[in-house]
Amino acid sequence: MKHIKTLNTKSLQNTVKKGGCGECQTSCQSACKTSCTVGNQSCEHSK
Amino acid sequence: MVHRYINNDCHIVLDVNSGSVHVVDEIVYDAVGLLEDKLSFEETAKILSETYAPEEVKTALEECRELKEEGMLFTEDIYKDAISHFKERETVVKALCLHIAHDCNLACRYCFAEEGEYHGRRALMSFEVGKKALDFLIANSGNRKNLEVDFFGGEPLMNWDVVKQLVAYGREQEKIHNKNFRFTLTTNGVLLNDEIMEFANKEMSNVVLSIDGRKEIHDYMRPFRKGKGSYDLIVPKFQKFAESRNQEKYYVRGTFTHHNLDFAEDVLHLADLGFQQISVEPVVAPPEEPYAIRPEDVPFICEQYDILAKEMIKREKEGRGFNFFHFMIDLTGGPCVYKRLSGCGSGTEYLAVTPWGDLYPCHQFVGEEEYLMGNVDEGVTRKEIVKEFKDCNVYSKPKCQECFARFYCSGGCAANSYHFHDTIHDVYEVGCELQRKRVECAIMIKAALAD
Image (tube, rainbow over all chains, first blue to last red; front, side):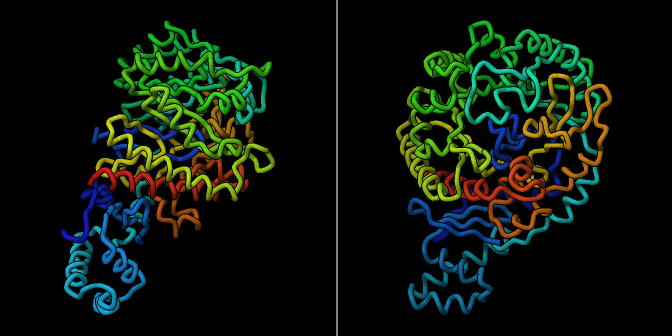
């Protein structure tokens, strides 16, 4: 595309069918403890 | 819903419901604004042709139309039904915050644990209580294989022998029950020594090392009980620890307050000390505290995030980059929508355990008697608390409905909401504003480094 550069091609909507295994890290076990950092985490299956 | 913003000369369009991130030129940036206002493609073309060359407008709108058809722009929120179905699943517990010591050898001014004591008495967790906590976790974890246990406090190194015994017990039990324990440790470093580092490097999947940044900032907020600062004692130990972990699977973790709103300096100080995994977060404190972040501090803090983001891009390009936890964003392998809607899991899959074995929704609720959920002997006896937390999500909070960052913070921290509004179903507004700024910066960094 000439006008648009898309940084990610994986849509969140695609995770509706396959997601939800619950094996990923709990956000407060990473480094926060006073904020909610779900968006800073990675999917367990993408590691 | 679409969020458009310009940061560091990058024009960015975030399609909220698909999570798609587009770096665009000015024509598309303007076009998306008009289309978002429900103008048709034809009307948009007409308006834009007054400013841009018609041929350019045509190709720009064709690209917008293509993204829309591919489900990457102007997508609908299809998750509300999915989450209600998902939440009908039985709750399992997969993570515990073990308050291994309600005692501390520092007297940090902002401590939500009140120098480790959490509105209660000083106490150390016994091996017996810890063992029951691990048994409770295994028994309530259903099919989950990865179980997380954070050794927290107070200061957990004040009860180190019990930590070691519990790790040994966990390693024994995980084989029997086909589980995988991920142990983590949060420490202020005062008692850290070579033996502890060696053990932690073998057994701990992550360690969180508390340090606030510049010496004068750290020493003011994190003194010993008699007033002396702790910076000089801990820095060399933390540097050694970070190196011994190959600069990964750890965070130096600081808190900034109203007293150091120029916290970007503290983050860069930590980077200059050689740390590559850095987390520095805003304090969350009652408004009457002198160190509390005030609503009027927000614009200055946002500028600091911008300064930090630009410096991080510069250092990354120079080959001396570092990670800042609050700017970490995984655009290709981020959490699934269920994770984003379930939030941090407090009160459901993540619980805190006091030294005497009481269960609370998370470490920040410890001592709030109305949220006492049960104990390690009887398990969760107050199921209504689990239900309250289960029903608390992005869709239960009216203020989240119009927020572009709702799938990144997942509705925010329940404890923050509780402490500011006496209910977990609200939001902590200052935290929200800073969260939105961080998401913008995190995406901008990705855009800038993608060039």
